[in-house]
Amino acid sequence: MASNPKDATAPATSEQEIYEARLRKATALREKGVNPWGNGHRVGQTAKEVTDAHGGKAAEALETEKPRASVAGRIVAIRSFGKAAFLRLRDRTGELQAYVKKDVLGEAAFEVYGLCDVGDFVAVEGPVFRTRTGELSVQAERFTFLTKALRPLPEKWHGLSDVETRYRQRYLDLVSNEEVRATFRKRVAMVRAIRAFLDGRGFMEVETPMMHPLVSGAAARPFTTHHNALGLDLFLRIAPELYLKRLVVGGFERVYELNRNFRNEGISTQHNPEFTMLEFYQAHATYEDLMSLTEELLRSVAIEVAGSAQVPYQGQVLDFGRPFRRVTMIDAVREVAPDIASREPLDAEALVQAFEEKVEGTLVQPTFVTQFPTAVSPLARRNDADPRFTDRFELYAAGREIANAFSELNDPIDQEGRFRRQVEAKQKGDEETMDYDADYIRALETGLPPTAGEGIGIDRLAMLLTDSPSIRDVILFPLLKPEAK
RNA sequence: GAGCCGCUAGCUCAGCCGGUAGAGCAACGGCCUUUUAAGCCGUGGGUCGUGGGUUCGAGCCCCACGCGGCUCACCA
Figure 1: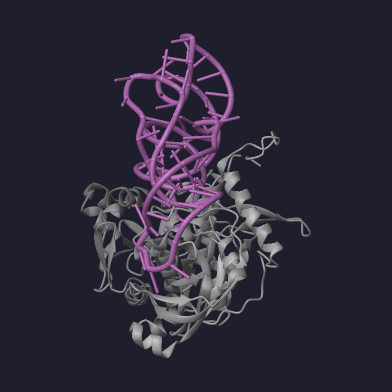
Figure 2 (figure 1 turned 45 degrees about the horizontal axis):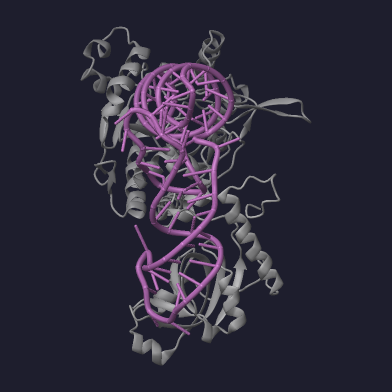
């Protein structure tokens, strides 16, 4: 204890002094028969229920009606007057002020209040009234202590702004920053809206393996793991694609999965090693059908989450309201590098590279880029008119890829050849290739109906719809190196 | 992986040309029965990210390391 000079072993940090002062209050509560970490208290109303029910009423009306409320929450502010105090309580729905007064509460309960700190959880019960300044409040006739917080909350004016602490201790970030709470609520609303949209069109949500014996579905380096009992090396999935298409083979004509993928690559404002992807597959549809579906999906989700199809993002306004621009990759490249676009024979690598370097970042408004080279699209159907390209599109917005979709390659013979070229590339040292999946070929041989499929990066979409500059602002617990200490 | 920037009290931040550490909030002790960043009086709180070095003297200069941010490279 810092105030005890005899204890030389404990460093006298002020953080520890705060902790110990609060611990003493917890002990004092126990001595009064109050469990500082009790349980079982029942809450009558949320803050929002109280304000919804009585927020429109004048002081006099409340004085006559004397409606009662029983609310609970974290104390986020205390304004004390000695024998009375205002406590600002926050629950999941909002905030409500409680007024505690010694002569109303009684000596014993008021002493319990006296052992409260900002950060603690308490419950109050009593009449709803309006204060002299007009704020709706609950007069505490009963005061129940719920939970002691031993550590202080960040400062009340500026909150918590240290980015590292915000990510490492997201609970503090959420307690301190209303905008952060709003962002994650929006993300949840977005995911819910997407599910509702797909469910409404006859899609079924499925769960496929996250641990894969083979690497497939995307061009990326995998994480590896091991199953002891089977003595089996496994890869965390980089994409669920081949499993979902197996389900279409099985007769589930419209399926989707909205869950985590894992890619063993760098971390940036656009990348987290585990990220959330929506993948959906629709039999008897083409990639062109999916462009229309994507426009409808994003429009409805933007309205649901951002309140408008015109979404502000980092100083610009992204318009999801109108049909998105459509341009073939070769036409897009022709505008910035005509020499590469007109090369004969097609230089797929150079075309894609030129697109990524010179075009991608300029695509601010939602844009479908179509007709990707076959060489970079090992699972996509070839274009009937020009087999050098595939019936594929990627959606770009704010200079970033948001979605990737194509008419699925359901020709098992073509697919086998594509797998073989992937294996050849891997043998030449390419670390981002797929494995040959013999069972997937067998599934295609069983018959995959004409199908189109799409993947949408949920984190990136959440960034756009919440005006967040970094993917870490829309992932509750982004991957960080462990703390030193 | 490379470059640049940051790391000072629990939180938000000052700290000049190198001279021995500051504010506000929070905490602690008082006063205060309608506040809204409540107010008033008082008190305590620091291994200045870590480790070296230069110097009579380092929060400040130099080196290394750690963690974080941004940019670039690769991907969704």
